[in-house]
Length: 409
Image 1 (tube, rainbow, N blue to C red):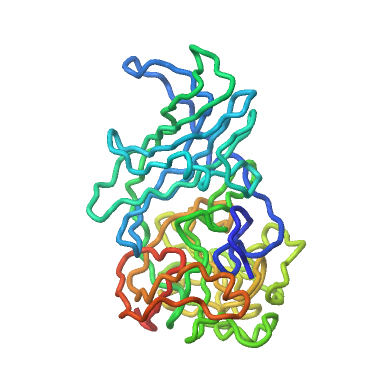
Image 2 (cartoon, helix red, strand yellow; image 1 turned 30 degrees about the horizontal axis):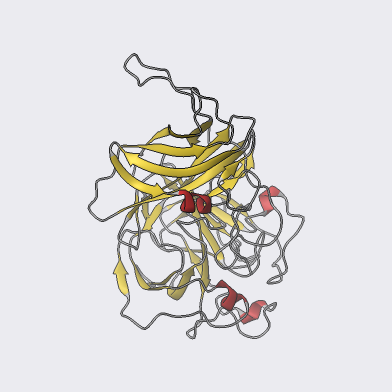
């Protein structure tokens, strides 16, 4: 089973976590090109030393979700420029004078990881760098900001007054909020009990996977979903955990989420034994058998870990929304059968920026409590009390959402 880990290449395994226990590269610099240095304006605020420098990995795109909120999901890259430890004491995300997210000392560590390490931290050693994963959730009806700024509180043991006091708040990493809207698509599956096992917006295996490729860090999986289908009694599989036939959803039809041409296809990788962590994968083998589709307007869809020999399309084919393109499998960097799906800014499954998307319609059955241990052991997930499904339109599922997708949306 795949467990929740902060970083891993194509973290598309089962459960709320990275695909498998196989080691993988973790972090590097920044998504896309590095930001150009700002040019001071004549009316700018006075220059001050900022021992921790910072920038946003990408400009956030507002996306409405099943919790009734609009989410701004992005990451900050921090670097300690000093030769001594710096402790992070707070972080506030602001829209002008309005504070949208406030992380005090006892919370910021949970969202921060040093480059190359999986453990939460609030301390940046000399010349160390880290990422802070942010999810700014705006309540229904709240205005979407045009620009965000960040007030970062730090402390150090060896201050250098008057230049660097023992404690200070830095104003860093201003970032614009994109005007573009998330693409509206259909779900890639049909039927009940589909679990979003590794989705937005915490630090799941997907969100934590900032992969260093060609000298840059890419967050292709920022909004990725790992789909598992639970049985009516809430189980993932029956019988032996290593038997693919014990996963009832193995071989489920995968549907095109929109009209658009096929860009690339990879097939021929063998089915993996469930819960046997794959090793020795090349970079292009992490998605397993997969299809990349051009959805238009700079959006590309990845359908990954497809069943060997099941892909029914080829590059250049123009797909129609709802068309069956392959079957759900267990190939590549995966611990158990599932569909990994995400939308990205380029046709490369990993060397891309992850883009948000919303589904045109589906039913939200429930949001499950963390159930990865039970499911991986073959026990039923803890289900909330029965309640009528809640119809959803033009929103993004969140991690642990349990959903029904209509056959003909």
